[in-house]
Length: 432
Ligand SMILES: Cc1cc2nc3c(=O)[nH]c(=O)nc-3n(C[C@H](O)[C@H](O)[C@H](O)COP(=O)(O)OP(=O)(O)OC[C@H]3O[C@@H](n4cnc5c(N)ncnc54)[C@H](O)[C@@H]3O)c2cc1C
Image (cartoon, rainbow, N blue to C red):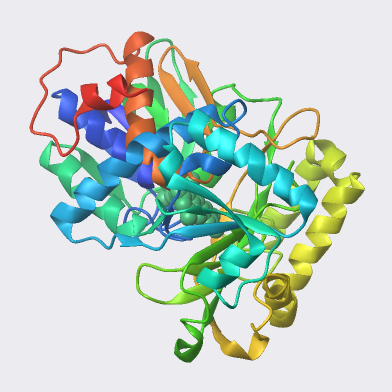
């Protein structure tokens, strides 16, 4: 059996950045186990690719995500400059389509400042002012935030993997964690290839599977999760410049962790519409709606006997889900959702689907979506669950906070030997 000091489950942007910080601070035997053949094959590449400024995040209920996003902005920007990874300052208009949504924009202006943005970063505009800047956009009013950037989070993750490897981290790729047994002062992990590895500290960053893994440690039993596929359509090149700025709208249903489809200016120069949020049975169901029969049956059973059944009796949620489903089956239904604020847009401007990604929000025992990240620990493990948008934006700072928490809790208790760093650990913590 191979023995490591630290095992990280999941080579997404989160597991990879955590491996980077730990390997940068200590001389330890660290491994990242990733079931795919490369890092960032799931949400960390399959996302909208926007480095978000946290003006739309409630500073009370989404404190961790908001703070991480704010601090990480400069970290990504500097790394992009050094590495040549795209950093396209697109700016964003966050639209209100009526007076009620305008009230939300007024809250966003306050939240943005509370979350640490500067007054000059945010402008509240009337619909006419927006139309002068973007003639094809129609709205009641909008916030313009210039600090919104399009990038490639998959490329960032692959770069950080290399930096972590330089510090000695081993990436065990193409091997899945099947079973975990927690002993008194270490954990034993059984992998898909029948091998076994062990460690004094396991960090669970398994994205859409993180709740299942936490449950193997006897944690998070009161929670359940749901998987939602976000789909996109790519605008044909001649309609790319229909709108030059990224356009989001105030979410129609505020209690749910997804936004209505938006118009996105991508880092590669393309424009896309999406994502919707289509319920699916597993974090790997990238096409179709059912997945394999056994996965579908077990998810259905979990829904019927668990917290999610409360959501399914909520008429607002059912109405949202039926709309999401329709916009998956029908391109016209998807584009019509955007036509409300870009009246000129037509389904025939889109002939190719974009890359879909899957989000896995947690459901509380009350049948509500949990708004922020859930962190749970045992004596020899740390679990990060519900790490959703803007999780890619916030990953460098958030992973430093996680490392600091593990130090404070005494579960990351080794002699330090800091090395050359692409980012400065203490500087990140000082901004928190
Ligand atoms: C459609 C969509 C749009 C988004 N848009 C944005 C955006 O514009 N900006 C932004 O900041 N954020 C965005 N996000 C959120 C962001 O992408 C995620 O918060 C972030 O990528 C999560 O990273 P992660 O490492 O936790 O998860 P993941 O990237 O999912 O990584 C988890 C990894 O664990 C591996 N794994 C799982 N189970 C096992 C196992 N048993 N054994 C071994 N390996 C395992 C998986 O293969 C996977 O690689 C979006 C997400 C989606 C889905």
